[in-house]
Each structure stands twice: as structure tokens, then as C-alpha cells.
Length: 412
Image 1 (cartoon, one colour):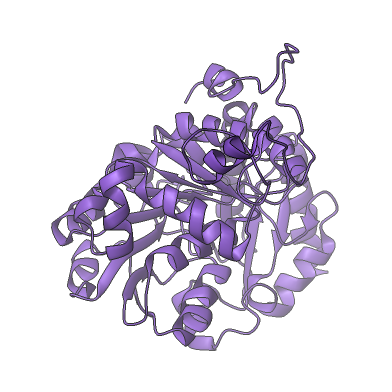
Image 2: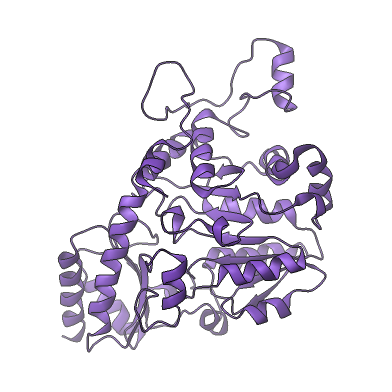
């Protein structure tokens, strides 16, 4: 992904005014010239817009750009990252189906699988996603998909996507990759075998903490005409590679209403234009901070796949263009010390988000994972002494100095 692509890819002005940025179509619905025209738009006989819950020109422009950047065949933008994952899983799965997923995923995805979908008869087996043989062994006749993150948040584990794609292809099921932490700036998941790519565009793609959003991209690898999803398989006879996205657009969007707000799509499209530049700085800053913390006597350990000591270092270097991402975690021995450290920071903000221009920290065990059992926290890589850091775009010396003074105050 180049900086030029981030600025220009998929940009087709929706009006004839020659605007240089995606305009905001802040409207709930759209007029048609004739009754037949509106009917044809509703039934998919001609392109157009009828109601923002289904599609909107501002959101469509963002969808085109993400499709091109990810090398996919199409994209659906949603109101949040969780809406993207929920729409996908609810659109594909039925009672009695199973999912194989990483045990170290984001808490929202874990609770969606273990609580919400479980109530509707969908089971999930959680595995060490870095153990390809364990993943293969977990797949049975009822398994309908494998769900992973490019870098576990906050476990920081890195799956071998090419190896996993061979497993899912042999089983005839799609590999779903949440690439929120890496974004297309570090890797195009389709190039490593992903069938479906999910993003929380709230994070690095937006980059400024101004808007909530999500996206689902179909890479075009998966053959829906031979899939185990009967309702999608039937639609593939007409829609081909776009069968899943067509179903989600006409059924899931209609029934659940996870549409993105036009203003949020505009803000996310604006952020996307600087993604390659920002991700490079994020990663450089994260590596510098990880090196500093790794040598600090008051830090028990640092988990960052960009450090050579990480068991995922070589794989991350290969998959993510020599980068380790912008997230890291550190252990400070006890929950009390972790709290004292967070409270002593001046530059970094204590917030439940990642991918902001500002450096953000959080204590996952008492916030995002507060209602998880101790065993589930351990499986997700969350301990009481753990602090997660989303490294921002500030001067690296300023970030380091803030962490250094907070560590010193932690002991006072």
C-alpha cells in the first residue's frame, strides 16, 4: 500500500462539482425520478441510493477505497468494528455451527462468541492460533470458519496466516482475519491467504479518535458457490464472488441496521489518506519504547513482536514488512504497581482505544476484561500486572521521558 493509493484509491466523485475530498451526504434517504427507478434500485437492477441504512455515497466512497487498498472484490462499511464482525458471523452462522478462534482475541469479540452467539446455538473452540496443527485438529464437520487477529490484542501473538489458509482451504471453510492492528499499510491479508478481512476503522485507519466505524472486505479468494452456507451458495449463482456481500447488504443490513453514519465515513476516509505515513511513525515509536522498557529494571517484561527476543519476531518481520505494529504490553509485577504507573503518566492518556495519534494506556484486567474469569483472562494473555500501550505519534523522546518519570514515581 502506497501513500498515493491511500489518497487516491477508489475516489470517484459522487457529484460534478470537482471536489477534492469525499463529500458528506448527510441525508437519511434519496429521491428517485420515477417509481420504476426506485424499484430497480431496491431490487438491485440498477445502481443507486435509496436509504442510508443500506448505502450512502459517502460510505460507498470509503468502501471503494478500502476494497482497492485490500485488493478485494468488495467491502461493507459498518457503524463499528464489532458491527462488522457481528454482521459477518450472524450473516453466515446458524444454530449448531462451530467457530475456531484465537484464545487471545479482543474482549468484545470473545464475548460475542462466548455469550451472545452461544445463546443462539453457535459454539466456539478457542485455540492457540500460533499452533497450526492445533487449529487443524479443532476443525470438524460443524466448523464453518476460522477467526484470527493479525496481532492478538492484547496477547500480542502472531499467527502464520499462510499456513492457516492452507488448513482452511483443505477444510473448505473461510479464513477470517481481523487486521485492525496491522492495517493494509503493513500487510494486505489477502496476499497471505485471508478470505475475509475485518477492521475496526475506529483505530489506526481513522487515526485520530474522532469516529467509530468498521469494515468487512471480501478478498475474492473464497468460492461461495461451493461453501457450506446454503443461503450464500444459492445467491452465488447470480452474484458470484459478491454473494456474501450482497446477502449482507440486502439481509443483514436491512434486518440489523449496522450502517455507518455518513459523517463518520467522511472522517475515517480523511484519516485513511495519511495511514501509511502514520503507521510508519507509530511502529518506529513503538519499537523505540519497547527497547527502552525492555532494558528498564522496574519492568518485569515487555511483549512486542518487533523485539528480536519475541517468539513471533521472524514471522512478524516477514508478514508485516519488517514492522512490529504499534501495540505493546508490559508487566509491572502487581496490579497496584500497574495502577500507580498509569496514574503517574502525564503525556500518555488512560483511555480505552488504540490507534490514536496520542499514546494511550490501559489496564485491561480491570477494564476491558473486568468481567472475565481468571482462567479466561489468562487464556487471553491478560494478567493483573499488565499494562497495554498504544504508541502514538509524539516525539519518541517525549514518550520515553514520560514513561521513565512514571516508572520512577511508581517506586516513590
